[in-house]
Length: 451
Ligand SMILES: NC(=O)c1ccc[n+]([C@@H]2O[C@H](COP(=O)([O-])OP(=O)(O)OC[C@H]3O[C@@H](n4cnc5c(N)ncnc54)[C@H](O)[C@@H]3O)[C@@H](O)[C@H]2O)c1
Image (tube, protein in one colour):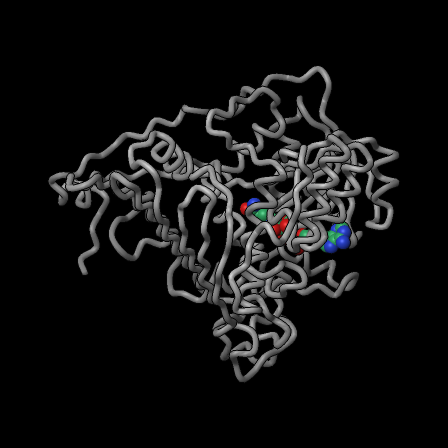
């Protein structure tokens, strides 16, 4: 197949209309952040990669007039020290067992929870109970019981939980939201969402704690919580029931040899997933040099027999507005990308995001909108610069700059976090039992709680 450039793609399609997407529907503050008379005091629990490089260093630099990082907490003091040095701050450091003491001594306004997924809930509850607001990374929780306790605690304490759903803030998400909210397609009847992860990004999950359900809840929680939240938000609906199939067909036990981790492995010559972490000074600083403390190997074996997070999954969701969604994720593919289709009463919107572009165009995110018998409209948008295509920066403005406009309702609270987690939890349950799972059977929300 001939490779088509962006220009040819547009020219080839005589009916195509290139739509110049205008994005300051809500803009982010860039360097012009208004100084705040009282700085928001932040404490972070879980000082790994995401904590340090998304919510730590860049926040401290970009929001220096609005926030102050007063304390750090982690189970691994060496990693915490590395994180503090990377952030270039003098924040007090606390062992995980001294989390309460940290809150009492440093009195943060907000606790940032960036631990391994399975521990989010424990810190969210304690932070709320001790009078702090919370910013938690996704997935908010990985079991139905954790979801219930978070809803109950937020309801009781009156404090607020925000969730780091940066995907909502990407240019393509904003574009989809504007189209779907405009009513141009009418009621959305069905959604197909295909997610392809390649043998770099996809495989990297299986090197780390993410490959084990007890830590991540499976990629249906760890990864797909982003995608489930995106759809929930785009169609402004909540899930009613979920059916799923899934299996581990490529990683984990699906190989004849294995080691503990790449740097000590006997099969480096023949394993296509061999990664010499020693050549990556950043990874050595944050993980390699700290592994004697907790025995966590960042270059763990993708063939580890204990891996049990599915690499092949297909999930069907019915929503309370009548929309049905079909979502698939495979994590061992030769290329990376997403294909999202919305079929509505009056037409269909298709969105193709390819991190690697093997199919049609050289860059950008392809949109195609077709109404009834009209010819399709095609256009391409690009990501912005910054973390996750500029999404991380927009999300941070909403969290750290009170009063930032939110015309699309992009700021996610605990209810959104719980709803996206519940789809993953129900999907896991459905895979394990073979049954359809009703969301209402998993949690009972406090009557006055909005989340
Ligand atoms: N929104 C996104 O795009 C995005 C991207 C990456 C990661 N994340 C999320 O960020 C979180 C952290 O991911 P990461 O990649 O930084 O992982 P990581 O392994 O680098 O960091 C996790 C940190 O938590 C610490 N920790 C583990 N158990 C703990 C406990 N009981 N108490 C205190 N600290 C504990 C670890 O020592 C480590 O420092 C995860 O929840 C992940 O899902 C979100």
